[in-house]
Image (tube, rainbow over all chains, first blue to last red; front, top):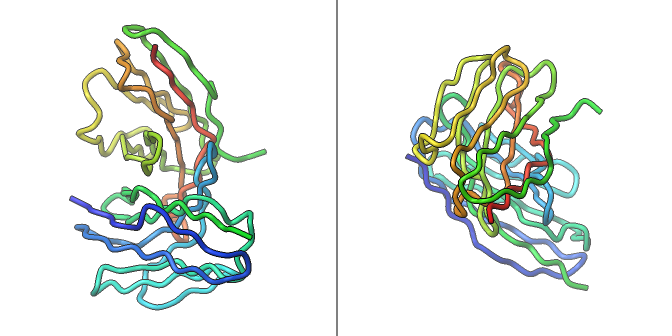
Length: 109
Length: 115
């Protein structure tokens, strides 16, 4: 089976940096996704890590440690529009993806 | 627009009725997934198709649920004898079999309300 843990809520200030952590336990692990989901909308892809290390994409970076079953999403220069839920998801066999409950991020002025 | 589309976007039904949802994936995508999402939760995997073959089905999917992808293109998800607990957002996603990252593209979802 697969188990994903991430904080349920976080608050950060506009312009700041926030790190959202995720731990996972899974069989047949292929890689780790991060998705962003605004309220009432479908998830949108942010990143996918297969190898250990940090991948940077603009203001967003994602890190993976396969040996530790750990990932984080780093958001820099926070903007109000970044207020959303951030879903950590592990890809296993047949590319079946198991999602965490999501971390609801609130960006405040 | 060539993204994933789902119909209807909203469905209100009475308990005990049958409902059917449709998903049209991105045209070149071989893999199609159905998820269910309730408020405050992440999407829960329901089932997965590669072309027309249904390769995996979650234990969450009771025998009241059935999904098909007859020609390997669009898919339907049917719920028979709906219950109030079936109220949720039903999300469809698709991906390329040989996609560089296996990224799943999600449709807008169908919100089901069972009265």
